[in-house]
Image 1 (cartoon, rainbow, N blue to C red):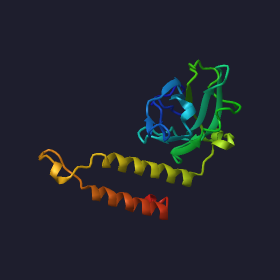
Image 2 (cartoon, one colour):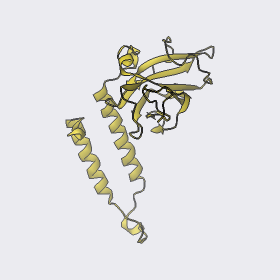
Image 3 (cartoon, rainbow, N blue to C red):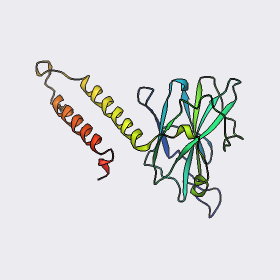
Image 4 (cartoon, rainbow, N blue to C red):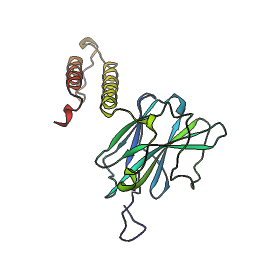
Length: 214
């Protein structure tokens, strides 16, 4: 963490956030391109097939004190020009957010802090931009209304997809006892244990999507 101006807030030299793309085989992107001291960009290849984007903090690099990150979606229009739209924001107190971008790919642009930067644009690649700003400024911004998604419903959907993905992945390695080859260096977990955990977590999530906070 460094600062260019003495006495001012220290800005992150690495992106405090990463993004999760449920539509692209649960892809997670943790590496961003730093285009300015306080701005980061994630590329979204084949963005037309993406419906939702989950932006969340890694937990390793917090935002500087009294600062958060505004989240922008950028896509190339029919002329190849960048169109930027404000989705919302994340902060240390609100470390994750889910945004719907499927209806934004033909919308109008809005004011944004990335205008003076030479960010390469390719026809099939969009971007998610993170701009580190003061919390007071974030509170004054108006995101695109159609990008908002109910946080509880979206979190439940995200968690359900994550559960399904993990269970299906673990189940794909299921073998019978007759197929097991003794290997003292490996530990085996019975498939019914994973299934029991999966069902219990599903049940608790249905009863209370925020049970994990208690």
